Structures are given as structure tokens and as C-alpha cells.
Image 1 (cartoon, one colour):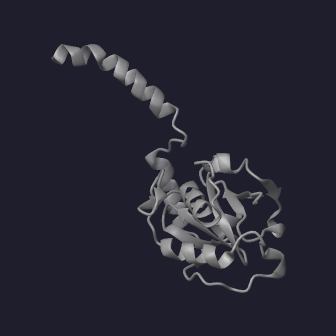
Image 2 (tube, helix red, strand yellow; image 1 turned 120 degrees about the horizontal axis):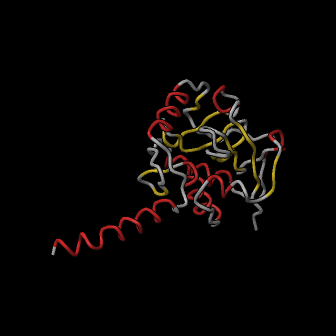
Length: 187
């Protein structure tokens, strides 16, 4: 019986290696995560409270019910970060944006920040409105992080250090890592 296992082992190893290398998520080393955690710990202007503040007129998105999205987001504030996660038990950044968009406006997003960056239309930072996707370079890959703009220079996202949280686009950490924004074309 053992000889069968040894006979098939090289083939199984090859299949596993091919599957692992072709997975849709980029593979990070533990050093990448540690570096990102250390940088994020230094982040300033972390927003703890999520509330509906009156949005400036130019930031209102007529196609998204901001109250519904905020109520949905409130349920998941503090949910832990989980690499590849896309459910209530844990989210990575793109899993969180996909989850919120699917639950709130019934749109399925691709599973990675790189693929989400290819969607919709490019938006300048000073033209952001509620619901736009905002992207960052947090580990040398562009983009490597994504969140959802919620108005007043704030965005909600799943961070490695804090899980689902709200941060300011003007925080030192995210300001220097901002790479762009996309607006999805909603029905």
C-alpha cells in the first residue's frame, strides 16, 4: 500500500504546486505581513466611530443608499482580517469590498484588489463620492489594498492590523500610499 503512495507522490506534488501557484491571490511572505503590520501600527487619524455625517453635496452617490451601506458596515466593524477571507468570520481587503457590494447593491466584484482596480472609471481624488473604491500600495504591489470611500475623506476597509475599520485618506500612512480610485457603473 505504501508503494502506491510513493509512486503517486511526485504527481500529487506537481498538481499541488501548480494549483498553489495559479491561485487568484498573490502570495505574501510572513515578512510582508509583519512589515505591513508595523507600518500600519504607526498610522494616525484612525476613525473609531462610524456615523452618518451629512455628506457634502458633491460626495452624494444617487445610485447607492448610503444609510443601508453604513448600517451593513456597522455590523462588521472589528471583524478580524483573514487573508483570502470573504465572509463574516474574517475578511481581507478585497473580500470585504466584494462582500459589501454584493450585499448592498447586488454586484459581484472580482476577488483581488488588482482585478477590482480594472473595473469602472478612473476617478480623481478630489472627485470621490460615496461608494467609490479607493486603492493603495501597501507592500510594493500596485494596487495591494482596497477600501470603500464613505465621504468626508474617510474609507472603510479590512486592514491587516485592525480588521474591518475606518481610516482617513489624510492619515500619514494612507496618504503616501494612495494610488487611485475607481467608480463602478451601477444600474
